[in-house]
Length: 281
Image (cartoon, rainbow, N blue to C red):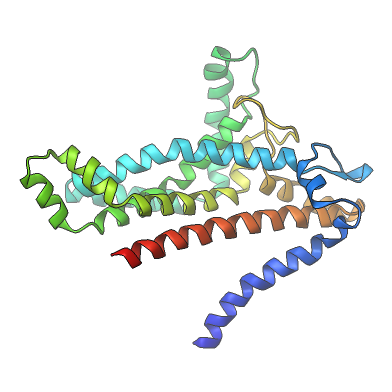
């Protein structure tokens, strides 16, 4: 058991080291700062600027989290504090179905419904023209994809609050909403932050669904109605072309390594918050 546990830990280290070693050749021609701050992506000329892809990843993830957090938070509050048992069963079943749907299905759904809606209904009120394959489309699809994870985490966090806290609040004359707002949410705030961090790390690595709706244009988006090109989509779209262009493989491995480091940081941060919660109980 110890050997298997150690293997799982070493696997993470081996993946990180392997990605780094594969990305080393590109550092012989470019500095790390130049790579992450340049906007030029011309592999044929040896120019690999990752800033548009980093910006696209941040835009899509931020939109997804902003859209998903209120829905997930109030849904979890309703399920734990207000709903009947049979409603929870139906909602949890629906969440399990949403969590089990392949990401490519979300991408197809986004292409058929979200993209036309943005292009024909929403975007004309704000910009002159939009194809619909935008940062907003990627954020909406990704936000729906992380909803089951967020709701499940929030429900678990809220359910862990002892009933004595609720009873004490209600006995002092507080309403159920005041109890939810000033007792449940305040008591579980560190856990909520940890859950959000975990959902961000989940959203950062999503590939196929976002790839299908975000437009895949290697430019820094300045509006939610412009196309973007997240790092996971860059890897998925171009990995087959790497053998024909010098340093292309190294550049894509660097993109994967950047994603690996960011996800590692977010997961470590969430674990630190959870550890603090457990220690202070």
